[in-house]
Amino acid sequence: MDAGPARRRLALGARLGAGGARRTRGAGGGRLLEGPGTAAPERAAGPHASRGPAVTDQGRPRRVLLPVGGVEDHHAGVAFAAQEAVRRGCDIDVLHVAHPAGREDGSGVLDMAETVVERTVEAARRSLGRARPAVRGRLARGDVVPALVEDSRQVALVVLTRRHARGAVVLSTMTVANALGAHAHAPVAVVPPRWSPGTTTAPILVGIGGRHAESRHVLRAGLEQARRCGARAELVHGWWYSDAYDDLVLSGPTGRAETARRRARLAAELAPVLADFRDIDVRLRVEHGRPARLLLEATERAQLVVLGRHQPLLPFGSELGPLTRAVISGAACPALIVGSPAPAAGP
Image 1 (spheres, rainbow, N blue to C red):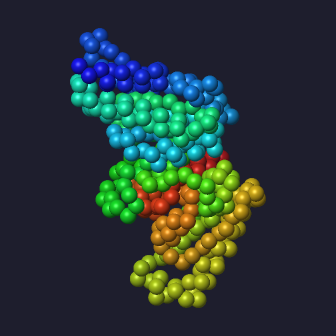
Image 2: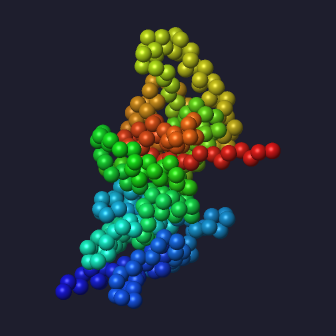
């Protein structure tokens, strides 16, 4: 009998500790997978386990959450998670969520999941090199998106690797990236599959929309990221009314006047936030054009694009919106989705 899977389970179990969802033996010899409600361990075994977990000012663990599926092509996400863990002073949690309907009667699905988690943990440690963040691996059972949304309450960042190449036709909007981007309690980074880190002087892009509170919230998140990276920031606002109208009416002096009006309005609205980041070189770029196209073209020369959610105008509307969905599915650089600002307290 091949003892390889058993050895892998034993080795991974040493790293998993009691966190997330631990594989154990039931009374009848069957394999059990605990649910996602179990508390995460404070330490994982391995070369980065010498210090306590990073915490926020409120005392909560600070972690970068790196969800992995049943395939091993997570290299871009691993590299980005390692980079951000160092910048933010966070540890890394590698998490695989197994669907409740999954079989455990020798099908090998969980053995494969364990292997993916184990190899991703090792890849993250290699990517970190001598850096201090710890890396842990966990398995959980549950519906994938709700489990990840719940786990995102206690993390600083969620990192996903985009599953399709840039320019691929994606018919469904019901992807894990879209669902987490819309509902996670922490910012969500979506990393293109061929992205790799490197020394760059490229800017941090910030997509600026038309809603005041949301624009200021996204701007602050983008400038905080620029400060972490030591980069300049480029704020991009595109405006477009109608395909049947803009090219004819707004392509000349009328369009230039509207662009100037919008630039002046945005400069005034964003000034209070910009005043808190005088150390950051900021450029405001306002253009007449389709916003998604402008942002996608700009990602060719950026190291990151920061986007926001929006409050839907209709009860059944999307919290991401077509612009954010288009950019996260086609950006040449990682896209960071930040949540909507908290509603103002009533009197």
